[in-house]
Image 1: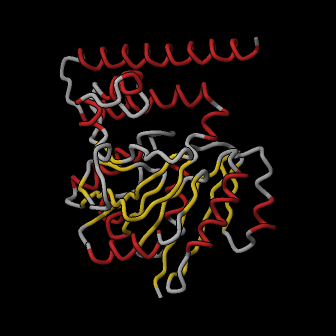
Image 2: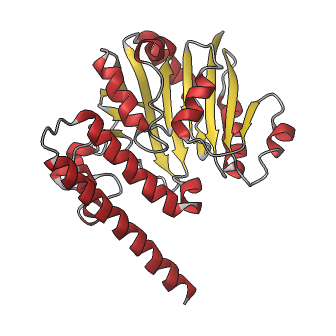
Length: 292
């Protein structure tokens, strides 16, 4: 029997969370026992129905939204298993996931984090295996404008590492999406918990980089897969999501890029601010158009 802990941070995604939990228990094999922990960040969509639907799930409720990293760290402190699965509530676990990824972790003790293949709800493969971000990622990231208009450009392919892959061959990467990552407890104890200065976004990239700095491998493992109904809680809080995304991106830049004269830091701040304003203005135009 293999034991794992599964932790999920929920924020106004309770309907998706219920489906996610159903998929977890449907996908669990007889030789795997999972303890599930849910941390609710002050949702207002009736999280208490979880008690009735899944009474064996460990639910922690907070009166205010403390952010993703802090909630994950709180739940990790409650867990004991050798592997911890961090999972978004708006995901669906495909059959065979657990046996495949756990066997991979057992056979590869130098892997600190493994991320599965992630499908979007439309069946497309999400760019979840990536290079560590640079200032160019703002233009050529997974959801950037340049990538949408020129999806096969060289810089996007260099940033999104699983874009060109076919088959189920594992590859070493800089970081994998925090929507679903299997993490080795020994690596957590060695590297430390998530950086709580990230309220939401980019904490996964930071954690993976710290893993690599401590000689742990971060691997994209496409033989295991999930479906991700991306950004459902973010869609309901778009302004906050855009602001926090860019704040975290700036903090990540400050943390890792040396800039003794502050010139690059100022340019990055201006660029991220302009990008955030553009996205918010675009959102406002779309909302106004829909009303018409």
